Length: 278
Image (cartoon, rainbow, N blue to C red; front, side, top):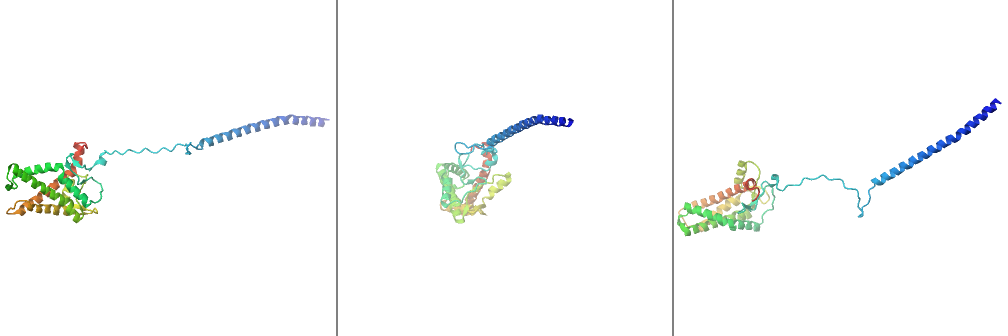
C-alpha cells in the first residue's frame, strides 16, 4: 500500500513539473529567435550603409579620399627669379643677346642672328648711345681731321654708328654662321662678385657652340677685328692706320666686356634696387 502511494505521488509530481519546464523552454526559444532576428536586421542595415550607392550619373556617391594640399608656386620668389634677364635694361637698353640663368634655347638660325644684330644696331637707344660716344671721341680729338663744331660732330657720329653696326653684324651673325657658335650671353646668375665678373669677362674669349660645348670665341675676337679692319675703308688715311685699327678693335671688345658685366648683374640690381620693375 505504501509502495503504491509513493508511486502515485511521484507520477503526479512529474506531471506537475512537465508543463512548467516546457513553458520555460518555449519562452527561452522565443527570446533566442528574437535576438537572432535583431542581429540579422542589424547586419543587413550595416551592409546597406557600407554599400556605395549609385549617383544619378552612374558614379559612386562615396566621397573621394582627401588629397594632400599642394603648396602653390610663387613665380616671384627669389629662388625662381634669379638670373632672369629682361628684354631691356632699365626699360631702355636692348638686352636681346642675354639668356636667363639655367634657360635652354635652341640654336639660332642665320635669319634669327641677322635680326638680332639688326635690333642691336637700329634700336632707338643705340642712337643715344652713339651720340654719347661721338661726343667723347670729339672731346678727345681722336680724329683731328674731323674738326670741331656741328660738322665735326656729325662726322664723329656716323663713323661711330657704322663702326658699331658692322661689329654687331660680324660678331652676332656673319662669323657665328661660319664657326657655328652661339653669340648670346648665358647668365651665370649665382656666385660671388669676383667669380661672376670673371665669368662675364671670360665670355669675350669663351663661348658656346650650337651643340652647347665650350669653344674659343672666334665670333667676338675675329668679328670685332674684322669690323675694325673694314673701318679703314671709310676712315681718313693716316701715317699708321694699324694703330687706329687696333684702337677700334680694343674699344669694341672692351665695350662688349662692360656690357657682359652689366648683363650678368642686372637681374640682381633690378631685384634689389627696382624691386623687379625693369
